[in-house]
Image (cartoon, rainbow over all chains, first blue to last red; front, side, top):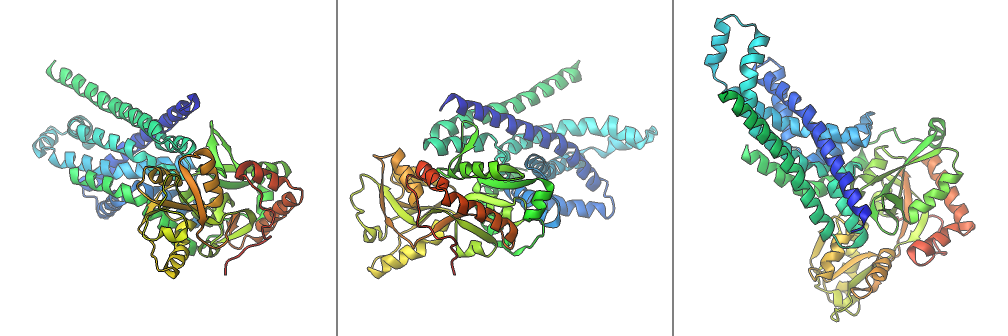
Length: 214
Length: 284
């Protein structure tokens, strides 16, 4: 592999990380919103969200990407590769996030909620001070797990013309007819990226534990 | 949770191929009015063309820059055109469906002219000959001619015209009392050639151009065989019915053949020039 091949792999890594972070940043709150709609059993919206989440969970990321990028122009909606990639990854991850959030919300103890109610805490404050901190803690490991899965699902957006780690490795392999070195390099880069996510989770959790026992 | 995760991982594997096949197959039926005609292109000031990212020697990316036969031919057009030409470099999977849905105005790629593709695309004048040959390992003495291919395992790109041409080889083999062996489909040709080299398949079918390039690069590893299908050509394409853009591109291609520029690029990239190509080529 030449020096330029390494640069292109690192550029691919930058694309993979940026797209994943964008998908996570949008997908986390979106997933929470969807989960809250179901948790609160909002009439009409709740079954609609349930169906949507099931559909998105069933759709492979590649399918979603092709749908967003190539099928939407037929109804007059045309978006560029990068936004299309972010939309794809966000849709894909928010459905899984919604289920993780919902699981944590369902497990949340009703007694605490009632206790907050009994001291006359308003609804929003109740959610922000009592529910959210505990739900975040309960959902964190599964959410981080989903983040790492998103990183690994991201090569799907290569069909839109976005050059991520995997696509960069494919290009190098196609030029040299020696696919092993670029794919090994790609594997190392993916490992580093996923390791950083896990490391961040550990840091957050140990900090929280220290605060909890302080 | 774990089952959800497992299922998604599992689906991801096969989905790419399935979706590609589905998109190419079904999107042909959806009609949209978004592909730009020549007038619309001139009015908005730019044309969007799609080229592939790993299809040597036609279009590929080297040191971060697109290059290859089609890219250089496009470079000449870029100098002549009164409008800007935007080049999108994408993997093969979404390329033709993207032209069909109007995402790109033209496919400036080495697309084989096939009957199926003619149903949703209009092909320009051919830019190259692309008759399908077979290639084998140089040290494999069991294959000397077409009839020796009987029962052997063949590697071919999924969704490619080479895959669709296999029945022709099957007919050739059956005429001699042989049969077509098992067919292994790959996402792209570098993988197929890799597997041929290590002996997982016995031969690979691809166009004469791609195979000559392969042999030039790996002389000791591969050896060229014979044609395994009828004559075929490669051409750029626009969305079906986009006649004004088709005529514009055909005018350009005809001029570059006349002044010899196209043949010079063919010699440079494809190793030989094809001066006897027909001006139009349709499969009926």
